[in-house]
Length: 219
Image (cartoon, rainbow, N blue to C red; front, side):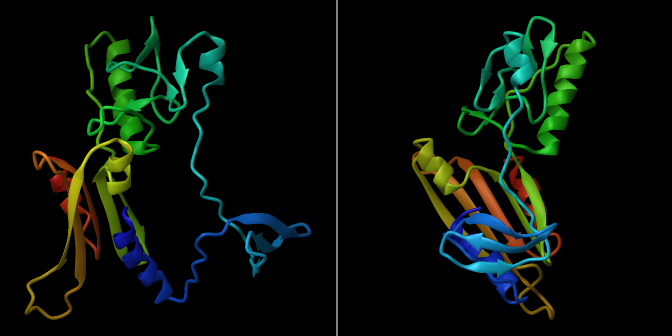
């Protein structure tokens, strides 16, 4: 998600006593049999009972490469039928995918994408012709009591892809304004400047907010 919505999520954490250290990196884990402190690049030591590393993923293409199958930084290169070579199919986190918004190679790292890519591969292996033009990368998660969801590309990805976009952040409510116990919903829409075509959307809000992304995925 873009920084403006990320700040909403960050504030929700800070309101619950979570401290965020931005712009620094961990450089060492201190302790004996188990971690006790984390040393950061700004010279700080953070006491810790355990550490969770969320550092992304790298496709494991060693087997495919050794067999002469074409690979890229995004994984095993496959066509719209999930085929990597004659009688060779690949799907999931090890396989390259196509972002239908940019038309560029991608690796979404999402179970939903892996499922459908594998379904396409399985149907073709079974002799049933199936294909997919690519994926939108729709995703949703919970952070505290907030739903955070997105689809398509954000403004940073748009710039990197050379797509000139405009965006609008629309604060609203999850119920009628006069209704008691309502909560804020923040919806961001990103469209191409030239033709107004939707290229991305993001939402942060209470339970049920992510359904807005499910709807926008169909646009």
